[in-house]
Image 1 (tube, rainbow, N blue to C red):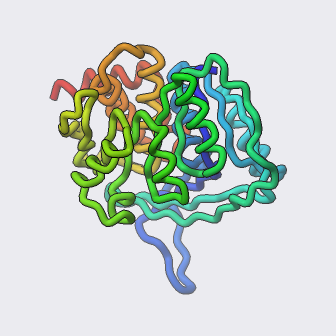
Image 2 (image 1 turned 30 degrees about the vertical axis):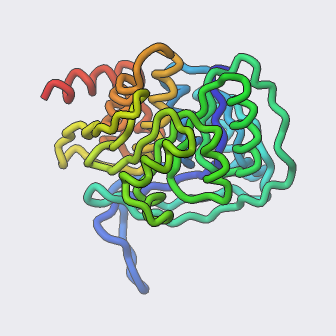
Length: 296
């Protein structure tokens, strides 16, 4: 494996509609997509689409949704190490005006302990904080083995503080800042204090405020995608994570600003497509986004 991703699997049902019906009202969506979902899961599929050898430790149920997920993984050559749960998890997503509402049903009652995977040859680990025991186990093992460790800090988990001590690259959301009662600047200081070599906070259309290898804080602005081309922002952050992992694996000696610029272009592709699968960029798609929007 080139990279190991650990997270929670969802099946995402994304519906494009003008309004959410209430009461006894009914509405017909203009379009829909059904795809894999989950933060680290979507990042894993993105890295695979970008040419990386990917292993994924994730929740898996022996039901028809679980079997559908395995079919999706096989299509992208993602090697799945399923950690059994009783029921598959679902997300219902409605994008609108550059935002999205999400309703989730999750089964994270794992029926078996953390599996023992062979991580020899692994060069990067990416976590989203789900499977707290597995995340901590493999973050510690990878840190000891000199493997790059990355965290999608999308929300506060039971082991976030402890886990960050083993993380090299931590890119968090403003939601985590709110949950921890921190400003964005305070979050960057906190990540530095936990020993994260690279840290940042994503701020949607405002880009990423982050600090580099030298500790210098800077802003990477989002690419200026015309509003009428933005269809679905859900999953854009996950694609960002998967793309910077892919970029690191391709060019481990490059500076992180280069990896993040690559990832920014991947996210720009995602927001122009409905659902996670349609929004996975190829290398050619990333190059096209960079050529078009970084020059404008």
